[in-house]
Length: 230
Picture 1 (cartoon, rainbow, N blue to C red):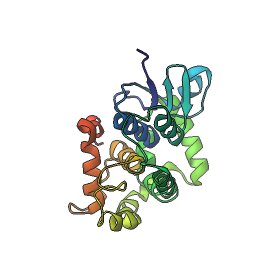
Picture 2: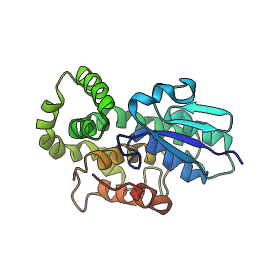
Picture 3: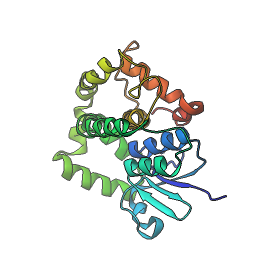
Picture 4: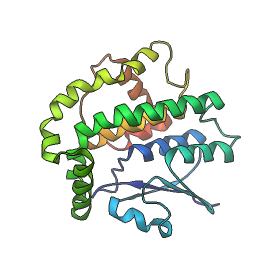
């Protein structure tokens, strides 16, 4: 039996993989009921994986197949394991997932960066810290110290950015409806990234988005809780 390998991202502690994109794939694989071995890898060692197959993770090896990019991995799993539970529930679910992906990347990820970027730097090894500081400060146009000084304001303003999700969850238990689909795992990955790296408390106890996130953490024998919050 071929062992599937999921290459994911970690800092100095391999037991604390934190990439939002890799967490999407962890839940997608569990959703499909597929066994895999996860190999968390620091930023600067990723280019050496699988003979330089990808500059970023996740990378999934499934037998002789290599797939990069979380959405492409989900599409691959859906196509190659059609007898397993569906990640999309049809073409409409793929379209929904693309929307959630764009919402997450354009609204949620920048907001989390404002909260967690300095914390992420602090959990990296020395070589990765040099790379991370240089690349992120160039991208953000601000120092990590400036970002840290704005953390409290970023935490306070975070929950409001998820109002469309909050209103959607008034109609259904998951973004996918009565049960989760890949669309849920996309947004879950972002919030899990923040939970593991920064541990920020961004939701009130009765916030529907926070309650949805708790339901997602409980999925598949609580695999999301296998890494504790920062």
